[in-house]
Amino acid sequence: MTRRPLILVAASGLAREALSAIDAGGDRVVEAILDDDPTLHGTSIGGIPVLGPLPRANSYRDDAEFVVCAGKGSSRSSIVSALAAHGVSRDRFASIIDPTVRIPASCKVGVGAILLANTVLTADVTLGDHVVTMPGAVITHNCVLEDFATLCAGVTLGGAVHVGQRAYLGTNSSVRQGVRVGSDSVLGMGAALLTDLPDAECWAGVPAERLR
Image (cartoon, rainbow, N blue to C red):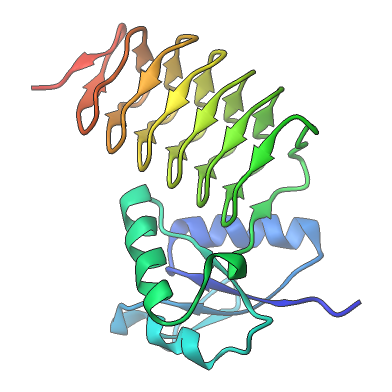
């Protein structure tokens, strides 16, 4: 069976981790990395060349798929919009799921997701497009993560947590069941969120409170 070529976008630490997950899976071939930073052109990550800026996406045939590897959800959102301007439609984004991750039948994962090692989805979880989960994230029943949300390593979500678009949850933070994390918000490392976090605010601490 011919394997569709895969193009990573953003020469980042997340790209290195994505390559590790791809190697572990053994069912994809990464041809190149694209990045708008000219100082990175001609370099490589994990032996994969950084060939040029995002407009080069036009040069790949229609069977090539893309994965956006920027660590921040806002950056992934901007890159996806830029790729759309260069003819990359939603159906050309692939997801990278480490082989240690099991996706139960009741769970849904959008396009362009990156789920790194030992991410746990229990039941009736919904992940939007271009969601990223770092190693060891735990997402329990009926949670919803909207597009471009990011869970860092060791994040734990209680049941029925709702995470808004482009929200960023720091390493080892936890969220009480039924709580909402607002769009474009940040939850700090090691924080314990017990109440709703509004849109576009940064909270930290135990219990988590707004940083002023």
